[in-house]
Image (tube, rainbow, N blue to C red; front, side, top):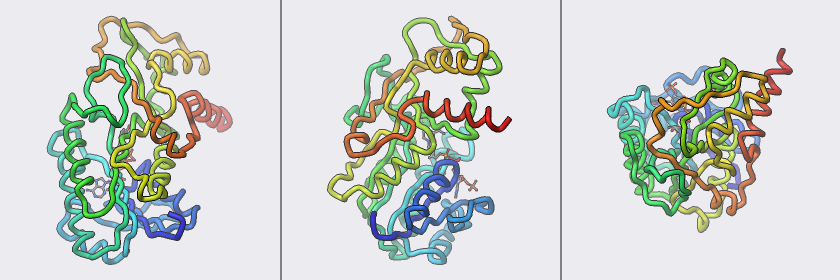
Length: 290
Ligand SMILES: NC(=O)c1ccc[n+]([C@@H]2O[C@H](COP(=O)([O-])OP(=O)(O)OC[C@H]3O[C@@H](n4cnc5c(N)ncnc54)[C@H](OP(=O)(O)O)[C@@H]3O)[C@@H](O)[C@H]2O)c1
């Protein structure tokens, strides 16, 4: 994507906003679609629309035409219905609306999740591993990926791990409060990605030559790591209480190590190759803020 392109970010929230700003910095036009776009920063053109609304074609025609589309919305609630509406029905509606409006789309990216994989007992998974979701959340993502990959344009799904970064401090807060606990037995692996790398990987896939755009990509950092190791590292760094082993904790039902070798071999270089760089910078920013 070297020529300036108009990119629709459908569901422009935490990751989408970072992506929009990066694209704008690189000279593209980023349009951020959401129901309440008033707080989008300068640099991203706001587009007020509901992805599930029948009026979506009119809303799109006011802002396009679009050459690139990134679907990065999230569900309103934790029910199967809310998930299906957000990821499957919204995406189908968007594809139909883009077709109706004859937008010259050359690429569609769907932001998916590592929840599409089943339990691998802590073993490695990559893009070649069959999907076998353990929950309705993963099952909906599998269905939505198939909708995206059946779109009438070149398309791909990026399966993100747990997103963290500025403002997403759940693990930091837990450790700081002395509430970090981990299960006994073999480690539970954490597969994470910093917000800026989630956005960076999406921008990378938008720019990749068409012949290199495989349908499925894993979007996790370069170092899957046992959750207990993150807790211990953070506790040392924050001078917080030592995380506790708790045999009563339920074990994660989809224990796996996600490997993002393909993303790296395609030329993507992580800003935060591991949790240490990511959380380290967040802690430093907090320390400087006072
Ligand atoms: N969080 C994680 O750890 C994680 C892990 C793996 C994958 N993912 C995936 O990554 C993607 C991005 O995550 P995120 O953290 O950036 O999500 P987010 O901050 O919640 O952003 C989602 C955006 O979608 C918009 N939206 C929701 N429903 C909409 C609708 N019907 N019409 C128009 N816009 C709608 C919301 O804005 P309005 O409310 O203003 O409409 C919001 O800005 C999601 O697909 C998520 O499933 C997340």
